[in-house]
Length: 284
Image (cartoon, rainbow, N blue to C red; front, side, top):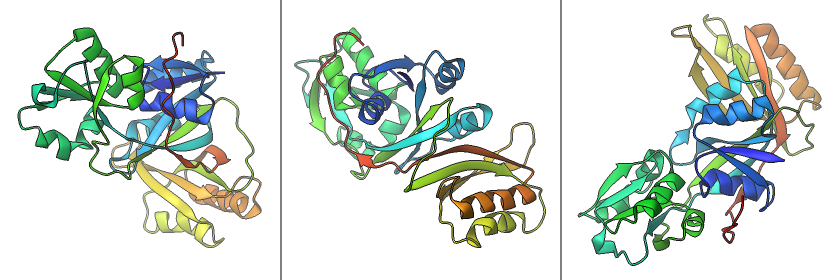
């Protein structure tokens, strides 16, 4: 088993992978989400850990598009508690900091804290753990990074402040993708995507396939269809699994209305976890 994730070692996605599988699972850091999906599609990695939405920032739209384009299956999910930390090189004090580096989403989640440091500016980096890695390599004594506690452990740096996020009910939902589908038992959910003709009542009729059978919809998301301006695909998460007769009938009903339907996966409903900060692993 080898799990691809986007970011550097110490990223929240790595923590999610180790929380879902096991601490010593083999992981494969990737620079972009495109690379992540390519590694799993090619078979060089068996699974991918894909962030899909955050309770503060909302959906990660790029990954919805990747789910549509790639022939992979969602087989699980995990909701990871995101706790941001202010990380510095040894000996750096709060009053020394002039630059705070992190991914733009992490910076947006920590604005109350960063604005309280009036002498410091927030600077966008490509990745939370990557910001810590660069901080370590630079040895800067006037800079800090915002990232996971795991990143501080991995790069031997110090945490000056923990829990610097604005909202402490900050969770990211991750999807686990692979090439082979699973057949989950309850409680389970199905993720699918569909499109329909642009006619009055089309969305109402599509969703009625589930409402008429008392199937609970957990999320709906729309995304533009590539190459078709002002046309959209709709992503649905719903309770149930493909072996559940009402769900199977609802999807068949939807296929009669929609121009296309793609099942992205049926998988066990995931739990919310805090995530465990492990000791540094010398070889990964």
